[in-house]
Length: 325
Image (cartoon, rainbow, N blue to C red; front, side):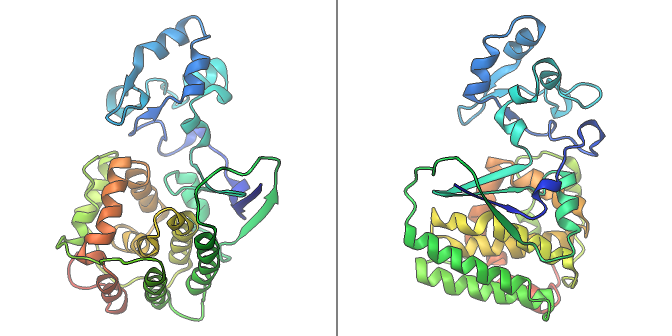
């Protein structure tokens, strides 16, 4: 199998208890089957603690029931994991071992990256100076079985290279590049399947007031947006590049390429309107990308909200951001 990662991927290292936020607070942790089978073989206090907090969520997943202030029940006073301490990092739930990494499998190609939801990862990506690029390596893993249409996959792979070239064309200001990216996404979508863009009247600020609230700080940010033009700085290029890498090829599963392109543009607008720093992107990502409920809602709004239509987004990019959010 080919493993494709961003060039900065190996730079990431968790800073554990020194982190300004905690990935063990705010959301529930899934307890995967392999971890649960291992916990059944344990004895003593740690086994009793695990058994006492196992629960089911609304999707039927086995989870650890959260403690006060939405903290994982195994997150101690030093913001360290008691399961990690008791039985080792390799026996923490799969979600914990992987965070903030994500994996997208495409048969004989596996793509791995890190998410803005982690403050350390956000800082790394936000502060890149060179255009985001990727490295391929070989490993001994077998291809992942799938039902991917090979023609669509190769079509999207070629198209993604073009999308990166549009985003990273520093001869043009970033707001022009993003408008060109939307035009390109619209063109690609017409070659895949029909896409009814917009139709739902909702203010842009309402898009980001997620029903499932993870960090109150994010809600405060959505209540005081600063509407202004997109700044021509490399961090906006980096934000757009992150979304294209993470989501663009996933259109092989639903042929919805235009929504993936819109996500790159919306990510830059989030950063522009709610706070021009990596912390804002961290908050948005933790609140949205890591909540199935919030992410499903966001994906639906990408297709239906007038303010997230191609025309609506281009108007904001090319006319200085508009008068309201």
